[in-house]
Image (cartoon, rainbow, N blue to C red; front, side, top):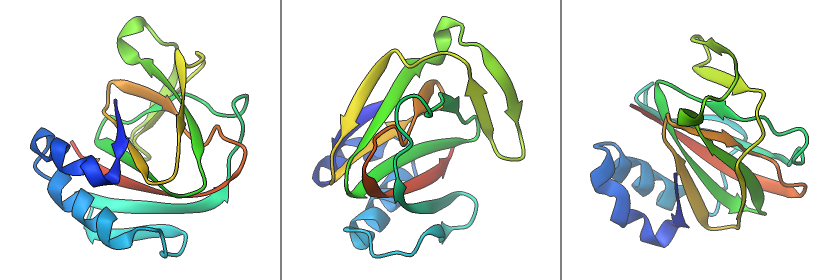
Amino acid sequence: MILDKLENADRYVSLHPAFAAAFQWLREQAPGGLPAGRAEISGDRLYASVMREGGRGQSAAKLETHRRYIDIQYLAAGSDLMGWAPTGQGLKSLGYDSAKDLEFYTDEPEIWIPVPVGHFVIFFPEDAHAPMAGTEAMVKIVVKVAV
């Protein structure tokens, strides 16, 4: 997991061949004028999901992972609270949905991380995360980067 400001994103482009394109696209979209829904970047290799909604609160946020995608979650407006736990500590899975590339867990996050506007968090497949745990309205752009 990585948490940083969008202005520092170039520090991380060497971690994946598609990160440079993902961060460039995010810079062009900020502060988040896109409508809610899927935004095409480069087909299924690199796309974004734009959310304009309120947070669910900590009690409703569930840990999840993805096997085929890395998430870059960027806060264009508002703020979020995200939970995190490493998958290597025997989390209890509710099963993997390959069609959605989504696996939920019954465990609680190990830590909660406040994420303010202008910041992004990168969640790799080994990072279980519980997004949208804040309680205020937000505009979040989640860039999905194929592993």
